[in-house]
Length: 181
Picture 1 (tube, helix red, strand yellow):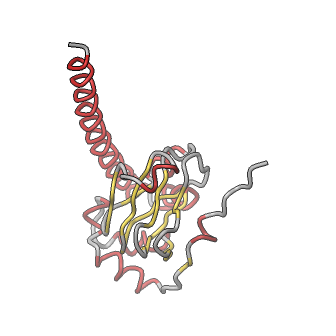
Picture 2 (tube, one colour; picture 1 turned 90 degrees about the vertical axis):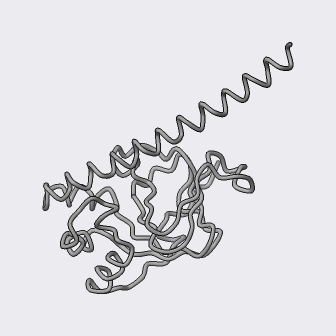
Picture 3 (cartoon, helix red, strand yellow; picture 1 turned 90 degrees about the horizontal axis):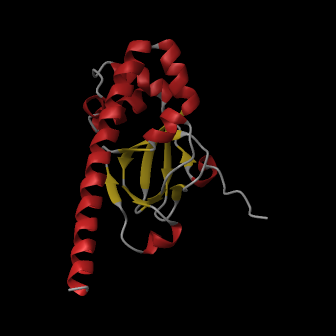
């Protein structure tokens, strides 16, 4: 029987920041622009985000995990891989300060589609699916603006992935055609 992996909260250390410290940290990375909200809304979002810190080499989430949360990368670098065995190779994406990961699981609650790995010591602001739904109930306009911005980010990433896949397939077909004369 396969042992269930440790939950995120056991792999990362929760940082004890007061609300003012959280707001200052969120402003530091210009999260209002990234998240598509006005700067004053960061004070509201601070109540729905929890800061965590992890060391280099820590897995943030695994493919098929059912933990539903999104991370804002405050400090550090996160690499995304499609398979665990590839984590020694090239990532499909490398993201740093000011980026977010895990939006799809936050929105639809489905299992993860990839692995996320802390490529260096990393500080993350985490929004759980539960807090996402609480934000919807408490501040529906802010929630709607956030959801729209997350959708835009996912669309941009899907376009980038489609372009990369298209180039890869084009090169693969070119090699096959050259080999077969």
